[in-house]
Length: 317
Image (tube, rainbow, N blue to C red):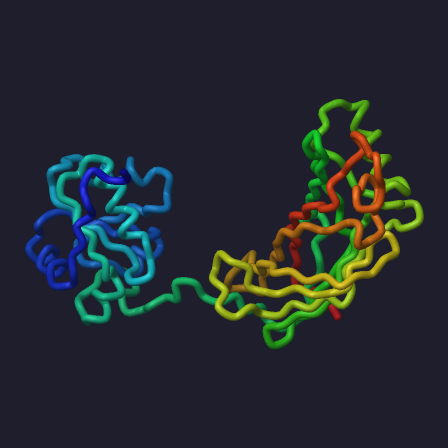
């Protein structure tokens, strides 16, 4: 059971009557910067996405017998309903959810308060990278790996060596180089065992870094994904991935986000996750597909990669 009572859903007319009749507290549960711009007259604000939401409501509405009209963005947004359910669980006796929210209020042409009441900001503006060249910030970029076996897993990092992206009309092309000599373990606390594992990974058993010191993603192309949201991957990445001297096609969905100064040139972060079948690139150690009677030397074929690549606008020519 999520609530003590069923959420009471009200329409525009009932919400308008509640506001005009000052029958209780009108609670806007969106982010404070949006509330500052535009809100229903007389409303107070507590962001439902904040971990202190319940404490904020307790300060705004200490008397739980007072009726509360809750509203969020409107159709397709669960903020208002989620807030109403939280209030019911807190013990508020009369909680009314205005399901149409601020959107229905605005469409009806009803009055608003705020610093910019007639501005209707895009809830999730699409990520549009300005045309130009972006250079990888190797110090800010991270690639994290996870390898697994019967006894658990090892995790660590490997550093980027260089990379760049050229954006034009929403698409991008570029490349990435990875310094395999920097592969490091981070889960082993034993200072004696860690270098043994790292040497094993660098050896010809795994990545043979003395002969193949770099991995590379060549011919990298980023293509926008239709229908992407602000919290889902919004680009499809393709390219030729070179590891241990073997080149294979690679494709996955990634999230490209603008970072830095929203009003300036800014930069971008490219983040994603993938499970890489290492055997496709000739990394065969411990794979039961290629060896029998491995005993405790079995190692899962898949290596998980989590990465966040940070790029800055190129300067100069």
